[in-house]
Image (cartoon, rainbow, N blue to C red; front, side, top):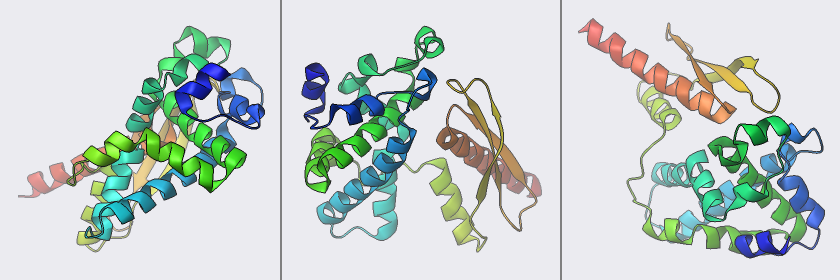
Length: 225
């Protein structure tokens, strides 16, 4: 355990919380999914609060874009690789053989679970400094015109056109529990169009569905000219 404590910059009072945070559902044991849910909320609040104080002149929409840019799965996976978390994740045999410890979705989910575990182990006073230490360089160097993800771009476009927000619905889940593929439908009331995105996580499938929806609207507009 001491090795990962050094990587994380945090020592657990209750090591069992860290063990659970590192346990992927493919192990068939108590997994990190509940901790992932908690960690996602803690991370979003911590980054939102830091951006709020760090950029007092930015509008709400810009702050939301910056937060989305910083907490997305790709960035979380990058952090996991920097902290060498992949070598500590507990995986089932199938995931081990397929290189699950290097997979972006698993790395990102594990980082969120670790954040949730630190929060339970030490509360806000302990978890926030750890998160901000991990994010120090990114917070310092983040471009104020951070690229917007597909879901954000779709939402902004629909708001500008006075349409309701899109809904995302899981229409299918394929594969073994430790290696699932999600199919998620994106629909907007008032627009005769729907798309189905595919991804190794719900988050990725939703982004894919939103990107396909944007592309479908662009093509419709081009053909309508």
